[in-house]
Image 1 (cartoon, rainbow, N blue to C red):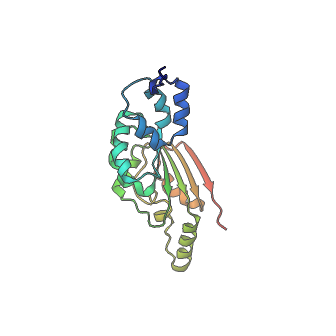
Image 2: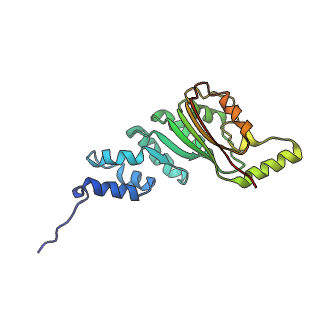
Image 3: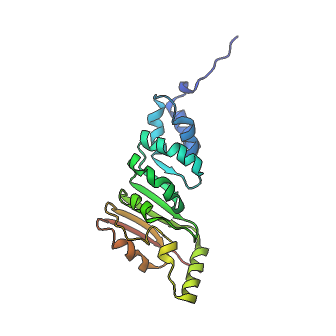
Length: 201
């Protein structure tokens, strides 16, 4: 008596939605992006329209991100600030409108050319800072030397001179409110601003 074998494409749509929800963004792309066009692909699209690459290595990003941007409608990326140089050359391949940018270390410095490439196409920018200890270090330096490193190191993308021509929505975490004016002066079409002030103890 032969056993009944269930093939991948025999699964119902709901089963695929459950599978995609369980998988990481890396697994979704690596396992399914190259499958021939079939009913799976429209189901997959909603699970890869926003791609988080903060924990991905450069080799994987360079292998898969260009392909994904060309073949799919990727509307948003979440990345670390030091990854901008890696992905800025791919921005013209797709239609990325939203970026969540995470600053993680004091030594983050972003070349102005890379920042310019990113800034010209964005409609929405979310700036996140996840290392309070670094801010305390910067504050100590300012107290001891008078040098204000905040704009340069907390959000290096702000500490430049280019204009965010298409930016309409901005969300930002700040320790000091006055730093927001730097980016506001270079966002002529900004319509929505969300600011979260963080407390340092």
